[in-house]
Image (cartoon, rainbow, N blue to C red):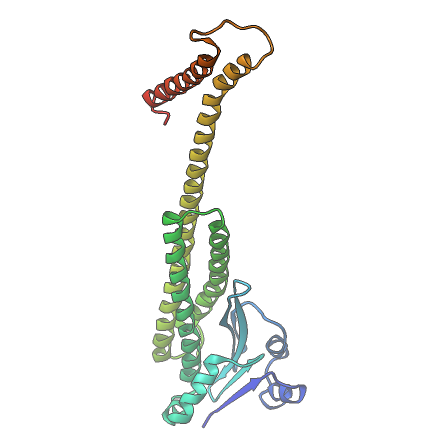
Length: 293
């Protein structure tokens, strides 16, 4: 016979179960009852202490929040401690209620089921990130906009948060897959190796997302820069063409006697208009011939 004890936000009285009933080491109990820690595994001889993180993506803050789940694994017991509701433990608990054989497989297998469920919860969030990435990529190439840079940078922060969550978990589960601890037998190590493979793929996808979003950011900045260059080119051409016209109209606007043009005073206006159009056309033709426009 063996037992599974699940402590959800344990009160001080409930927390004494860890020391008075199971006689766990004080340092392990202190870690289990304190704030979040880095994922890790420690062997205390008679039991194995493990910290892993459940994922909880916060869309408003653009980060992957994590919730600690602390595991105490022994030959005849599994104790889980977590500060609040855990989706993974809730699913496994429902499975135990529907199938009595789950608890009959032993504490190590139950530990694997919980960790495997935790890793499975990552997949929907990865799919959401991939959808957002496809949308950003499409917008960057088809509808480049200066406001798009903010969305790209927010996505980079999301991916960085994902990597900070996945990679430490991968290293912790790898130790379970390598059979470093007597409580993990060969068959159970195979199960954890499968979980480790999932975490490796998730970490690889996170790195791929990081490289891809960096390329999208570079392409977006290039597109925005090209747009700016086009605008500057148009403004420069307009200014260059307007400069001699301004000089000409300024000369004929002075209150001094200038050489008269043929046709009398009435025709002089049209002569000036013709000269303005001629100068403009000549300059545009030169720009076109040099392929500046």
